Length: 407
Length: 80
Length: 116
Image (cartoon, rainbow over all chains, first blue to last red; front, side, top):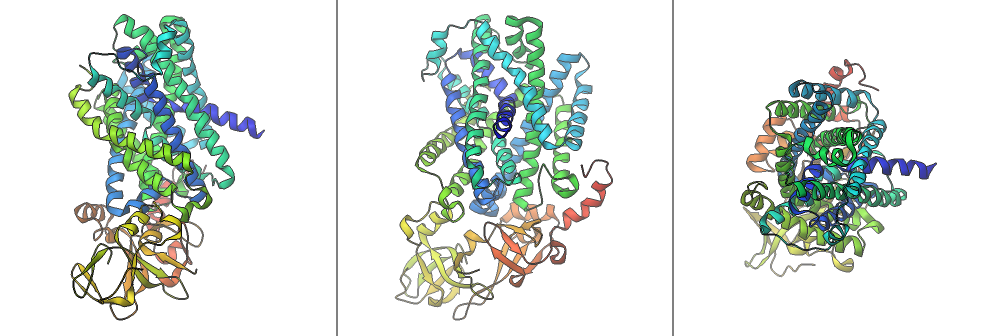
């Protein structure tokens, strides 16, 4: 029974891994560089596994979620700066995800986009208000599994497997190394999006994990995120095998679904759309809650997704306000795919603010006792801190130099 | 207190105060030491102090006066 | 509660939990009494937007203004213990903490499904 439950959780995690940032960056990277950047996805996925395991462990042992740790370690002033920047990035991501939901609904129904934004917003509000969180996680996680259609599509497109394999070995053969670097940074940013760890660690605190749950935490992080990364490979391979061959740059979410439609027909298209719809809606809900978690944890308010709205009033009002703000922003007609690129790049800049404090708390014996970072977690953790700082410093220059990946 | 510079009366700089150590006994916690210098800051960042060493600190009794941004301690005060 | 703690590291900016484990704010600042030549004691925990002003310059002032500037002083006698969180002896209401949540609750309760 326990194994069954864990398996269900993992399935939900795989379905929940991919969000609009992964969709956009993996497919465009494939369409631009073929399979060359697959190795970057591996690095990104290992990174999110390392840090979500660390966050989960901190949550289980010390009962602190990410923004508790941020404030305790860097203090009020720097913590406030971290809060403001992560909230801005979070709101951008949320806006992009909601736009993505509306686009999927539009492709499925043919109704006008603006109506569908409203419908998407109302639907998200109602789902979050009336559905118990366990169910939210499952519904959107399992729905997101439809994205596995891209794995089938990737095989059916008969990619040159030799070059796919070669893609896992770091190499670069291109005339435009800056663009290559831009996509590498984007892929890392998309795989290690900070809202994932906010959400994960807060969930751990809420479910009252203790040291006995540390094994579960490890399994969840490794298999859930690890297999989620598998979907990213599939997306990039369809990008390389279909779009690069035909010279298409997927600038619309609808173009991405071609990756499944061309090899598999109508059914492929439908599964891809449903998969994207669920994955992106689930990500929208995660992002929404993350924003509320961060604020509540920074200020010490009552919070929790398992609480009744009346159990955590300010938390509830915060997510409701964020949802309205994001809906307003989508309504301005901003292009969700483009906004996604900006959101991922800016989140890359904000990454150190999240990951450094977590690394520090995970090393603090006073709270972590015998569960402080071991040698492996520290070596990997430090390596990734270096990676994160590099991408944080290079993200914006690369964005400007490549004209947001356009050159 | 935190952030001020700790100096001796004769002007020898000991370091910057990074934290205050207090005794949790009965009643209100009493400040016993001022944590100074780099090691205290590292500890704040959880980097831990190697093998049971505590970060550098000066006892509160050694503090003579506080002038603006400086905490003046008695001459001959050493970090412990 | 015995042993020694670093006030900045182990108390400041930590979560406050009331006697019923309700999250009711953060340790926004500490009030000390005493000076050179006498004992320096931690007498109270300060909490609320009004305290941020002193802690973060311009950005802190802006946050304090947004937060309404209220402040609450919790005498150390009402603190039950310091661990991962700072635990209080009384309920949040008695100490004047968590008021924002209490003020919003009646409105939320009017919406159906608020206590699913």
